Length: 372
Ligand SMILES: C[S@@+](CC[C@H](N)C(=O)[O-])C[C@H]1O[C@@H](n2cnc3c(N)ncnc32)[C@H](O)[C@@H]1O
Image (cartoon, rainbow, N blue to C red; front, side):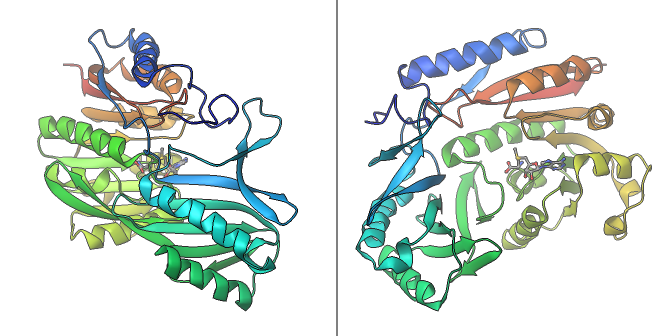
């Protein structure tokens, strides 16, 4: 990918290296962190080097009557205006510049106190545009924003303090072909979504490859989000219990289960800490009264925690389960957690997925099996 803003925009930091060099550098750093636990070569999953991000947020810079998209600068002490951003997927790229023209051509209504625009798009060309304001939005705004929906064939939402204006929907529906099946996922503007759909599919297929080796039994998942891994992996297990802290994500997960006609998954809104307490019989939750926790016989667990990694109690809980699939967006906390997990389990597969090209961030995964 080439971008005229490399070096001045703070969003992409690894611009000085070719894409292959970046990948090699990331592979070396993840391999070094995992070396005490895994001596084989990592499986490496690359990304398209441009047009890979399906969600992006841009600030709006006002100069007199004109608005421009802006990003934090590389020195982190201000912002720069941008007029290209080749990392966003085509469904965003084809709309974002037309949207800017429409904002600039409009009366005050779309422009006044607009401070950011967010895009959430799918590989099937759906796009949700959220316009964020420092003022209350009224019917005149809704009328003009409706025109954007028609002209750009997208969904538009407006947000300001304590106000959310939904003109048609607050979600898009992604369709992904995963290991020979097609899955539909509703993705809400406010919920977590994996940013790079091409790499996301590779990551889910890697997890399926591990699940296929564990055979039957039940499947436990923590940090399940909208059911990104849960739905495709549910085919390889008898029953599934999946938990997540965010109410919005659990609602999306329930919808996704229905949309894909999957009936062996139970979703519960629980933090990882609460899930551990519930499964260890230390706390009783009203939210779980319809679930017979004793009926599960977990053979496999998948965790995909935020950057902080796992807490002590969750680590202990998953160590009681034979097979562990650990997906991580921070190889340092993954390595820290492996110090404990490898006391009872052995890492048998490890992979790196380049979800975030042109940045130092990297996603990795390990598959652990209980030692005999
Ligand atoms: C890296 S995301 C992964 C989501 C999902 N696995 C996916 O692939 O889309 C981490 C998820 O953990 C959730 N989360 C954050 N802290 C949590 C906690 N303490 N307990 C449970 N879930 C948590 C977030 O809401 C988010 O959905």
